[in-house]
Amino acid sequence: MKLIVGLGNPGYIYARNRHNIGFMCVSHLGKMRDIPFDKKQAQARTGIGTIAGKRVVLARPQTFMNASGESVSALLKRLNVAPADLIVIHDDLDLPVGKIRLRLGGSSGGHKGIESIIARTGTRDFYRIRVGIGRPDKEGSAAEKEEAVISYVLSDFTGEEKKTLEETFPSVSEAITCLLVQGLETAMNKYN
Image (cartoon, rainbow, N blue to C red; front, side):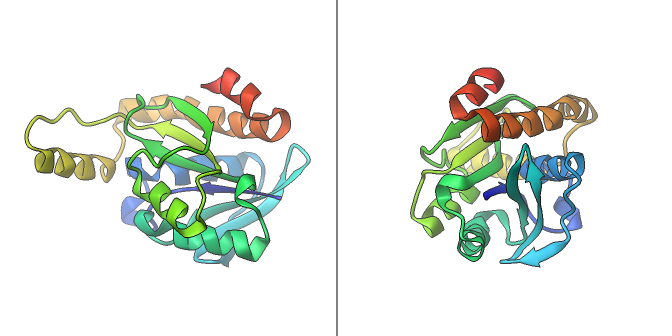
């Protein structure tokens, strides 16, 4: 079984924020594969189904982003899924809006949700699908730049960005299917 987690913040006020791109992607995947998020377990909304003959659990943690590891580690234990069968979809400031990158392992890159998952699971060896949200163009001190980033990730996408994402969501779903069926190298060559 594979556990596919989209990261974000719970609650209506955050629903369309840039930081919630992981939620948006996994929700799109669920819709395309007719997998409803009809269960609540391990502080997450989950849906169970099949993608390309593989049994999957889709999840949207209901902890806040910085505590994503609480839910993800609990889901791994409850479902008896190894971290090697975990795929996490999350936002990335260093990629242009809508660009995707797949990889296995590595550092958190400063992403608090990924840091939390690494800390709670004790491993970096899980799949990541990074989805670009761009970075704010802010001059000033380190504190001012940090404040600008926080405001930016908690703001909604613009109309133009939403148009770009209409193509990104299907690409992420296709990349996940490719990863499940053909493996990481093929998926990276095709979608990175």
